[in-house]
Image (cartoon, rainbow, N blue to C red; front, side, top):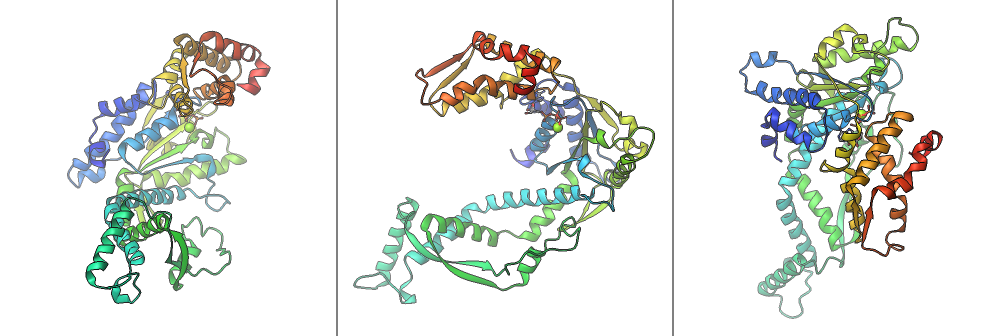
Amino acid sequence: MTLQSATMLTPRQIVAELDKYIIGQQEAKRALAIALRNRWRRQQVESPLREEIMPNNIILIGPTGVGKTELARRLARLAGAPFVKVEATKFTEVGYVGRDVESMIRDLAETAVAMVRQEKTAEKRREAAAAAEERLLNILVPSPATGISFEIGGSSMDSYMERRADVRYRLSKGELDNQVIEIEVSTPQLPMMQVVGPIGMDDLGINLQEMLSRFLPKTSKRRKVTVAQARAIFEQEEAEKLIDMDAVIREALERAETMGIVFIDEIDKIASRGQTAGPDVSREGVQRDLLPIVEGSTVNTKYGPLRTDHVLFIASGAFHVSKPSDLIPELQGRFPIRVELHSLTEQDFVKILTLPENALIKQYRALAATEGIELEFTADAIEEIAAIAARVNETVSNIGARRLHTILTTLLDDILFNTPDAIEERTVTIDASYVRRKLERLAQDVDLSKFML
Ligand SMILES: Nc1ncnc2c1ncn2[C@@H]1O[C@H](COP(=O)(O)OP(=O)(O)OP(=O)(O)O)[C@@H](O)[C@H]1O
Ligand SMILES: [Mg+2]
């Protein structure tokens, strides 16, 4: 999907796309769809009003394993937007040991640069491939002018051209892929030592090693490689020559500023209640550090300054102990949209197992198919799995849809182990009685299911 068409999706279309992967949670989908579309709408508004329009930062509230992270991830992919996911608990207040909050924006810049760079490389692939082929030809059929010629008798230009055409043809057929040739590869001469900068250098996004290697002379080394390997090396080198890194960085920073999405997980863990003592002090400190970033400020990255005014922040947490109102008021104000995600029911599990494009049952069927086995699940088997998942979630602990993963691995253990050696039938059908036979005893015994499911 191109960037253009993706950003043009209407809220209804966005929800329809999310529906392909996530079951239920309609309110959250709506809120996310509106937030995404509003960014596109903002781009259409004239300056100076445009600059005034703030992103609709969102807090997703809901128990574990109900689709919070999955929703944010899918949304970012839909939008073709640079996306980073961070855990709020990873950060510590400035001055303490740990990652400072600004590092999330540096990560965003990094992601955006990688993204744009990859796109540009893909655009230049044909050009790079053509240039790589020429280099290969120059090695395999050196020009007569260089003096080294493989020609036996008659070194006329004609036979050189003919031979070149012939080798070009054989190259394209891959006939020469395993032939070994010697090529020059340039390697920056790096002193063999670990470069350790002062504390915090890493966080500033400064890589000493990288900096040093830029000043050191590049030396080339002769290496023996196959034609196929040489082609890959040349294509990489040629692509690098063809892309303008300055333009990539400029575009990446702009994309991060206007489209970037930062997902802050476990925000509830840094919300403190009432008394501030002990670790709470530092939690509140993290919130205070977050404030300017969410509010809009300029963060220095190794690619240059990045303004965070229009970055979309999506926070998420279970909020079992604390409440969104336990966050410092200024921060609450910066996350105006709250949506609750719901616990998943047995009926949801039936759908989650079968409907999404990446549904677990589809995944396992595809895995079995690689061994030539058709794995079938009857409808009552699916219902039984969903029922057991719901029951174990209730009795042991509620881990949401993640329960389906653990149950399926246990259920299919024998089949996955015995395939392909000890399986005779081409079609393996899993019905409700098979599910019960494999799981009933485990599911009924709370102690056992604690360990096994
Ligand atoms: N509503 C849903 N529809 C489809 N799949 C789901 C749904 N909810 C969760 N899943 C699946 O369950 C797994 C865990 O979901 P996810 O990572 O989104 O949980 P979460 O809500 O972020 O939980 P946590 O609070 O622990 O981070 C993912 O593999 C996801 O695909
Ligand atoms: Mg999550």
